[in-house]
Amino acid sequence: MGILCTTASMSLAQVTGKVTDASTGGVLPGANVMVEGSNSGVATGPDGMFKLNGVTEGNIVVSFIGYETLTLAAKADMGSIGLEPTALGLGAASIIANVVDIAIARETPVAVSTISPAEIALKVGNMEFPEIMNRTPGVYATKQGGGYGDSRISLRGFDQRNTSFLINGQPVNDMENGWVYWSNWQGLTDVASGIQIQRGLGASRLAVPSVGGTVSIFTKAAQMEQGGSVSETFGNDGYAKTSISYNTGKNNNGWASSFLLSQWSGEGYVNNTQGAGWTYFAAVGYEPEGSKHAMNLSVLGAGQWHHQRDVEVSIRDYDYFGEGGQELNDGKIDRRWNSNGGMLDGEEFSMRRNFYNKPLATFNWDWTITENLTLNTSLYGSAGRGGGTGPRGRNYDVLPYRQDLYSFMYEDSVTQFRMDDGQVNYDAIIADNQTGATPHDGSVNGNYEGALIGSNQWSIDADTSGT
Image (cartoon, rainbow, N blue to C red; front, side, top):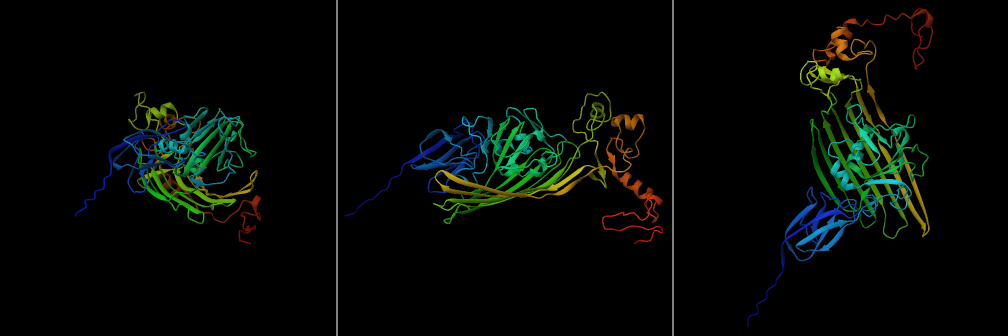
């Protein structure tokens, strides 16, 4: 007697659907759609749509950083799948402290706008971080000097000095003048997981200059889900960025860690504003199951250099110099023109160069003492090193004074250190410095004999011998 055994499984020809943000209805490009229990899956396209072929009846798992993971029974037409965002992408997806001030919609009496992780990923491209917020009500951001990292942002008409900027609850406005130097925080484009903009006096517990408002920026923490990625980004004007990230995921002992490293370079939209830099980020979190304690240590930094444009340029200079040739009133206004730029040894050079590296380290500890009592502690530190270059000495032969460059070169005929197209001839400047400089002969003006001339306690006596 023979027994014939057959096993039948029903396969769906194709599973299609669209992944969106449940709170805004916006599409989520790059969301993961996986077949439960397998390695089969796809990522949603720019329109949030996905197609899975040959799926056996079962479940699909839909996930995206900053949103709650959703498991659904597979069917041919999944329709619109709405994912609920966590608290700005910092809740269930990661380990982070509750010390961060967050305004809650319809609960906190503050006019507030929130930019989700999906919107950041969709908008950023090769833009500077402040430009992500440009379409938020009450916000105006511009590149200012034209160099990468020289942006400024206004909120409700107030400049950065009267607006508070917080990263994971820590103030980053300059302690002396209140300004925010965005070139120090370029790494935020890689690690930001949410932005909340509170217009007017906000919900921050800190004594900060928030007349214009408070901008709270939240970075990725130690991600609970294991995974990694490698990405390449290319943009206009030679912009290129390579990013590598990896998350260990949360282990059985409650530990999780995340790492990111990226490198970027570009020529800059404005002439002679090229730059390059590195972004580094690391986070270690600890949140064991059933424990009353949760801790997170993170380090974020972005070493960079970039050329700048800071000289005021007239409409006539934009018209005459730059692309289109040297001709007045030809209707070709070149907004990229930069009076600081020029050539040195056949390569681009600028008298204005910014270079800086300012890492920020933060340690957060949450302790749930009782059901109604919690203690949130945050320790942070930041140390920067860098500077900038600019013209010194006899620079009136290089830069115009109270006149535009056209008048300077063609009406006053000061062309010794400028080429015909208006660029600075740095080779000529160096040659002039070398031939015109005379070494110090050791003599000292009588009024200063015996005076201290250095912080090393070195002085010169009347006969010029060192004492």
